[in-house]
Amino acid sequence: MKKILFLFVLCVSLMQVACADSEKAIGLTDLPQQAQTFVKQYFADAKVGYYQKERDGLTVTYKVVFLNGDKLEFNKKGEWIDVDCKTLSVPEDIVPQEIRNFVESSYPGTKVLHIEKGKRSYEVKLSNGMELKFDLKFNVMDLEHDRD
Image (cartoon, rainbow, N blue to C red):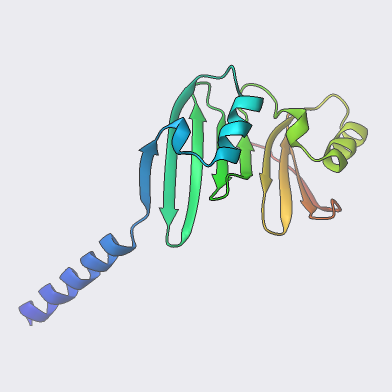
C-alpha cells in the first residue's frame, strides 16, 4: 500500500513539473519585432525593469515591466494584448478611436489607465474608477465602478 501511495505521489509530482508554466527572463531584442517597435514608440523614455517570455502550454506571451510599475503584454506575434499604466495614462494612439470618443463624451477629463484586448472584447479602466467593456465593434457591453 505504501508503494502504491508513493508511486501515485511521484506520478502527480512529475505531471505538475511537466505541465508547469515556464517563465524566462529575456532582453529587448528577444521580443518579436512588432513588440520592440511598440516599446520604442510609446515607452521610449521609460526605464525597463525586466522583459519576460512566458509559456503556458501552447500559448506564448511576452511581458515588459517598467520600474514605475507600468506593464505591457504581447502575444507571440508581438501584438499588444494588455497595457497597464500605474503612473501615467495609456498613450492615446494605442486606444481605438471609438473607445476614445466614448470616454471623452461620457467621462470628460478622465484618462485610460488600462486597456486589455481579448479575443472578443476590449476592457478599459479609467482614472475615475470606471471599468468599461466593449465588443470588437466597440459597442458598450458592460459598465462598472471599481470601488477598491
